[in-house]
Length: 363
Image 1 (cartoon, rainbow, N blue to C red):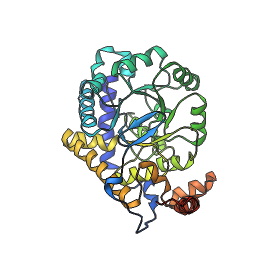
Image 2: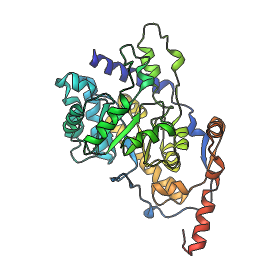
Image 3: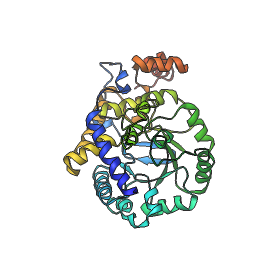
Image 4: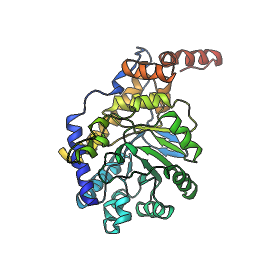
C-alpha cells in the first residue's frame, strides 16, 4: 500500500505541475532596476553559507519520493543530476523504509550515485530517534529534514489525526542527532510564530515550504473516492509571504514551494533565503524529458542566476538582500495584515549607499 501511495503521489504531482505552473505570489515581487548597478561576471559567486553548511550554489533539489521500484529510479536520476550540477539533494520521506526495509535501495541510491554530494535524509515528526539515525546512516546524510504536513495528513485517507506529539518529538530528535536539523513544511508554509517555535526546539534551519508549487492537500483529496476535501486546495501561505513574515528570525531559512525559474530563485534570495529548493518542476522535467534535460535545466538556472546577480550588482547570493524590491497585490495585503512594512524593501540600497558614504568604501 505504501509503494502504491508513493507512485500515486508522483503521478498526481506531475499532473498538478502540468496543470498549475502559472502565476503565484513570486510574481508580486519585482526588483527595482538600477541601470548602473551591474558588476563583472567573474566577480560573482554563487556560494552560500548558513548554519555551518557551505554549498557551492544556493539551489537544491528538495524532497520528493522513494519507497517503490519506480520512485527508486527517480531518486537515482535526481542523484545523478545533483552530482553533475553540484546542487544538494534531499530524499523523500523515509517512512516507507522504516515499515519495509527491503525498499532501502530506493533511498540509498541517492548516495550511491552521488558519493561526494550533499544529501539530506527526510523523516516525519513522529519518527523515533533510533529510526532517524537509521535514515541518516542509510544515505550517509549531511543534514536531516523533518517534514511537517498537517494539511496533507488531514485529507489523506490513511493520514495521521494526532499531531500533539510533533513538537516534543522534534525537540528530542534535534537534541539527539549530530547533523544539522531542518524542519520543513511540504507546501503550506511556515509562519513567523512557527519558525520561532522551531528555533526554540533546538532546530538549526527552517525550510518554509510555502504554497505555490505542489499542493499535497489537492493530491491527497485526489486519492479520495468523493474528493470531499476540495475546500483545502490552496491552503496556507505562499513562499514569498513566508519569507516576508520571517524577516530577521534567529535561524536561517530556506525557501521552497512554487519556485519556477532562476528569477524566482533570485527573488527568494533577495527576500532573505539562504538557499532555494525546487521539486515539482524538476520532477516534471525528469518524467517528461529525462535526466539529461534535468541536468540542462538546473545548469541553465544557475547560469541565469549568476547573470541576474551580475546585472543587480550582487557579488554573492546574500548580497541580493541589499537590492530594492517592490511588493504588490495580495502579497502586499498579507504584509499589511501581518504588520510588515513593505516600503523598507523598496529603499534598501539607500541605506547601503549611506553606509558606504559614511565609511568611505565603494560598492
